[in-house]
Length: 550
Image (cartoon, rainbow, N blue to C red; front, side):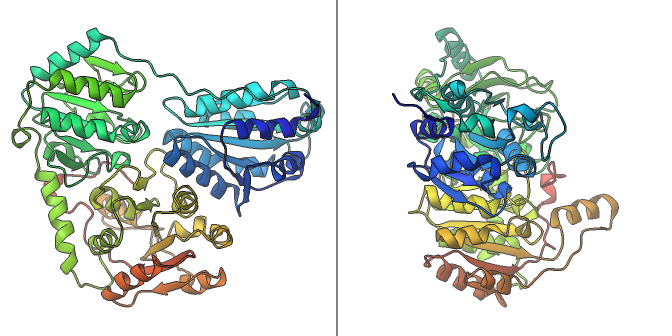
């Protein structure tokens, strides 16, 4: 085995992990690393802002279950990664962030562009480290990927000092191993089955963990075999096809969501892959009187409103399959468990939207048009803002990982770069992003990346010249709003400057026509839709006050 630079070994380790893309911006302190990438099977994709690159890695991780990789140099390059790395951390997306750093010999003193990036990344990563020696490269790379991809997944970070990467080393990558999942014991499984058999009105709350575990098929079979219906969180959309008779709808926007889905009357709640970072359990267990069964990949978080009677920790797909077999003999009647009231209100308003000819367009009509234009496996990515609440509340999903919503950190600027990554992962699928005019400019620069890569995403901008979700909150709390109005550039001309086809809707009929045309193109495109938010995302007073802000 011949000696080569540590940077060459580092890239060989990335190849051993199956990395296809590294998204980022090169710097002086990553010259050796970028030179090594140039001669590898890994595609380095230059982006226009490190945050955009980290969001791309975030989405690649969500869709594949394998850690996406992003790169920034020291100082400002590293700090520009922070928001998107934190998003991957809270949204449970496997991601490995790589940053350059100055030479080891200048870290003990004041030095140009030097800050302690390892300390900055510590609160927003599962694990992070400085590579202090060429010899440890195989171990730290393997650990970074193992930790990032193990349940619950998230972000890790490696800092590469410039002088370390230039040194010679005689080592080889460590073999990749799949993370090991525990399995619950027979005693816990039988206890859970006994609790379910003795229930009068059980209900399932399914979250992001079902999507990560590729457990939708097992959840659907569990509901079919037992008759127990299921509600989904925003990030769990699609784990049940919305047409499934066991589907109770998407919960979490308003205080009465859970009651309208039957949680108020439920005596047993089975949480499956439920993440507390989305919605606090006090909203569905306010009296702390539910018997709770937890099915998840790790032990339950501590919360006074979330005290499980049984925890089944392991591979969610296998646990659900085993539990379904144990409970198959005493099926429940879905007509008498849960409640379809929430689903009826939301889908009723959604279906009625096809006849809404108001202009500027109202959110339900826009979402109805998008649903008609997309197939069951096509992907809709929502940015953060009032439109996210509409999508989470109303947009129907057939399959998991087809409605992508950031609901842990929930940072604006998410959708545009994530659309690029989604198209790289699934070039055969249509990809649409929905953005507010408040968030679209936060990573608009990545349209240069999209046009360069020719990733044909359709990017829709809901334009109302306000930070809509804050207007909604201020009006409800104070009866007025302040500090939320702004002007916009001409988005069509701006898109044209990037070489993108773009249209501005002047009537209701324009939108569907432009959308269908855009979806046939082999380049990214943009559609501006004047939006009317006068209709309340709450939809019905029956559903109570809202529980989330954005």
